[in-house]
Image (tube, rainbow, N blue to C red):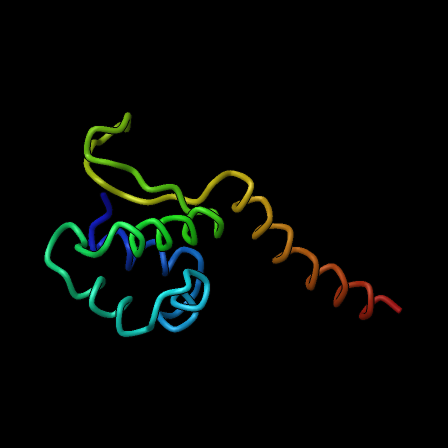
Length: 104
């Protein structure tokens, strides 16, 4: 299960707004808004929850359950290692290009 707080945090990690997440998941923006406004665990149809979780997974988000191994316990989110590396590469590329342009 995913909580509203996890959903908001996951969306922030990948840098998308509610509308963009709706497009990525095939859900409506009002559905995403309702999910994020929930108290605690998100409620929705199984199909909607599966679409949401699949979209987050494809974006590189790992959902951490209450009982997952962690040094502190509790729910959370993190980026997959591949997503972190891809984000780091995309941040490095523009800087390297601008540095080369200045050197010329």
